Each structure stands twice: as C-alpha cells, then as structure tokens.
Amino acid sequence: MLHRGASPRSRWSKKGGIQARPSNVDPALATLLKDKNRVACALEGLCQSREATTCPAASMVPDSYTISRSLRDRTLANLDGEQQKFWKEQALLVAYYSLSWKNIEAGIPNPTAILPHVRFVLAANDSSGKDVTISEIAKALPPDIKEDLTLTLTEAIRLPGMPWKHFAINRAKDLCSGDENPYVTTRVSERGSLVSRLSGEALQTLSHPSHSPADVDDQRIHAARGFVAIEKALNSVQVEQLPEAERSLNEWLPLDQRPNLMEQVILSRKHSLLSKIQRFQGEFREALGHIHVALNIVDQYKSHGLYFEEDIHDLACNYADNLRELESFDQAEKYLRSIIDGASVASRSRNVMEASLAECLFAKGHYEARKTLGEVTPEACSALGEARKLCVGLQSQSTLLKFERLRTLLTLAKICFVEGNYSEAEGHFSKSLTVMNKFDRTNGYATMTIIKSMIHTVRRAPVKNDGELKQRSLEQSCEKLRMLEEKAKERGIQYWIPGLRGWEASLMTLAPVRSRI
Image 1 (cartoon, rainbow, N blue to C red):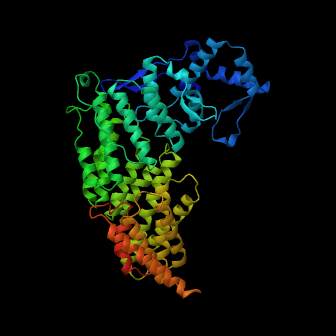
Image 2 (image 1 turned 90 degrees about the vertical axis):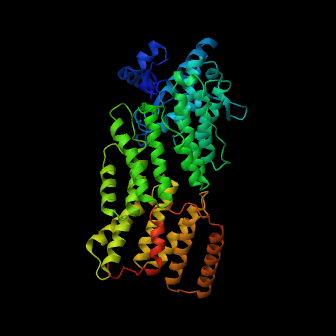
Image 3 (image 1 turned 90 degrees about the horizontal axis):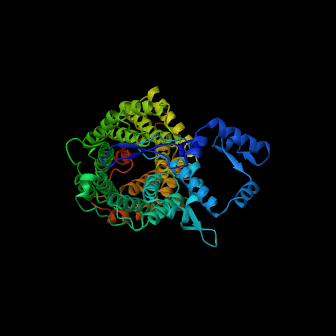
C-alpha cells in the first residue's frame, strides 16, 4: 500500500487513452515509501521498541503492522497545527492513491485491506463517532487532486461491501459539490444509481450529459454517456424491461469508426450485457454473437495497456452458460476449466466460475443418463459426482455471492432429485426459495419453476409420518404457484438462471437414475 500510494498511477486521458498521473505525495516522503528496505527497517525498529506489532499471519494481510496508540498520541503532540495538517494530507494522498482503477491498472491482492485507511483519512466524524461528511483536509485539496480523488472513489465503489459503497459514493458527492465538469458529475451520478440499485432502493432516473463544444476537447464526456447507457440498461433489467434495456445500450456508439481505449472498455461491457439480455429471452445464438464481440475486445486490447481480469469471470460464465443452454456441454466445460486453471484467478472469480461449471457438469451427466435410458455410463456418474462435490464445497464458503449460492443450491437439488433422494432434494429446493426471497426478482419464471420442482419432489417423496402435512404442503405450493402465474409478465425474464427452464420442461419425464448409478 505505501509503495503504491507514493507511485505514479494510470488515469484516463481526455482523448480516451491512458496517461500516467504523477504522485502528489511530498517527494522526500515518496522516496522513502518506495524504498521497501528502509520502510521494513523502520517498522522493525518500532517492533523492537514495542511501539508496533505485526499482524498475525492468518490475517490475510501480509506485511501489515499496528502502531501503538501511545506513539500516535506522542507524535501528534509534537506537531503544531500546520504540521498536523501537512501529515494528514500526506496520509490521505497515500491512502487514496493506493486504490486501483479498473481496466487501466492491474488488480491488487486483497484491496479491501486498504479501505479502512481510506475511510479514516476521508471521514469527518460527528459527536457520535459516525463519519457523516468529508474531512476538512479533503475539502481543502487543490481542484485537480480533488477531482482525481472523486473519480478514484467512483472507481472504488466496485469493491465489496455495501457500507463501503455508501461511504464512497457519499464522499464522492461531497467532493464534487459545485463541480461543473460534466464528466465528473456524470460519473458520480451514474455510480450513485448503481449503489441505489444494489441497495434495493428506488431506481434513479439518469440523463446523459448534454452535447457541447467541450466534447471535442474531452472525449471522456462521450464515454460517460456510454457508462450511463449501461447503468440505465441495468436498471431496466432489474424491472424486467428487456426491450428498453436493449434500446438504452444500442443508442450509444463510439465517436467514430476507430474507438479509443476508453470506448473499447465500454463496448466490451455493452456487448457482455447485450449477451445476457439475449440469453434471458432464450436467444442463445444471438447472445453468443455478442459475447464473442466482448471476448475479442479482451483478447485484442489486453496488449494495449487494458486489464480485464475483473471482467473475465463474468464473460466466461456468460459464454459457458449460453453453451450449456445449447447443450454444448463439453465445449462449455473445457472453456471454463481453461479459465479456472489460470494462475491469476481470484478466489471470488473462481467461485463464480465453479458454480457455472457445476451446472454444466450436472447437465452433462443428466443428459447422458436420460439418453441411455438403461445403464448409466461412467461418464455420467463422474459428471454428477463432480458437480455435487463442487456445490458442497461452494456452499461451505461464507463469502459465496448470493446468486452463486442460489445456483449451487438448485444444482444440488436437481442432482438429488434425479438420483431419487427426494427428501434431500426437497431441503435444497426449500433453501433455494429462501435465498430467492432476497432478490427483487422473486415473482417471475425462476420462482415458479422452483415451486413446480418442490411440488414434484414432495409428490415423489415417501410419506414418513404425517400424510396430512404433506398434502397441506402440496396445496400451499400449488396455490402460491397459481398466484405467481397470474402475476407473471409476458415479456419478463424467462432464462435468468441457466438450465432452469430446461429442467422445468423435463420434470414430467424424469425417472430416478440412482439405482442405475
């Protein structure tokens, strides 16, 4: 963190390219912080004098230290007001400069370890200790540094945790208050919409920055319109208005036939989202066309200074999920394994792709089992077994994202169902409904399919004790299904969870394969 915070950073230029921004940290301090040996010796000396302690090895933050409160208090007591102001500003610069910008800087290990430091130097606390506004040090920064800090906070909103997202967007709004730069204000507005949507709040109305002569000098403004188009499309998807989402995306085009690097990033996101929208409607081949465009941009421009490691898991799953829907199971499996086995895959990205792989393996094993009708092949046994193992492993992880938890629960439920373990399948389907209730999109086709699966599972499960309880459960599920069918939108999302519609179509013909396995 200290080395990064004192080093030059990459930023978008006004021409839509990448430029280096020099560090604003005091030159003497920057020289010290970039000398890892001097920093290590200084910290070791503090540890020997018991003024600092190293964090435990299990803390997931290597080479981190805790400075004693007494040393901090003595140091502050020896500084006058101007000196304190200087060092607080230096701390702010080092902390925020250590955050990376997406697509133009390589990712850093454990970026969330930086966030407490950023919060500390940016927040002004009220009498209760809550950080309710921006610090006076941040307010007093020169305009160009304040603008860079604002944009860095909008970039950092992608880091996990809703409390952090709210903090980052609120501080960005504080900083850009009164700013007339249309690029900065548009980015803050667009990211604010993102945070509202993720929080389950009312969707915000977004508008594009108006066209002006400044567009020629600052091509980032046109790129900002692209970010707004993507955010508007995501808001439309949230309420299942897929045609409107497509219109928002297709309205934005690059300035000319040779898109700059910033526009290439937007194009990759645009086509990735268009692919999802097509898949949600069951247009799998059209979806593949869009995902190929996005993947081609990644392949072509990663040698031009762009980084896509934060996007690749989403692109890979999108590609594999479309192949799975087209029953190209082997191709989907091979592609996912090639990405998962990559040396630089983060654990969170690996989880997302393994959830997709588990569904693909289930579909492959189930397809083989149904195709042979008689004896189940060893390949089918192996695929179902590995799918179960992946799902069980993913479910044990507390950091698993909500959608991947839902996916793996459904895959586990389907595996148990086709193996004839109906009681276990019922438990997993029931848990999946609980997770489904945490999503806004809970009255559509996916929910109905899960309830139908529950009905078929309960009907097949043996009656252990109370037959009346089983009958009441069936009646309640059937009534809930009837109510949902009345509310379902004709053009709503029918293929949200990959494989679920195909599973629904096969429910009536499924025979347990457990005895043959």
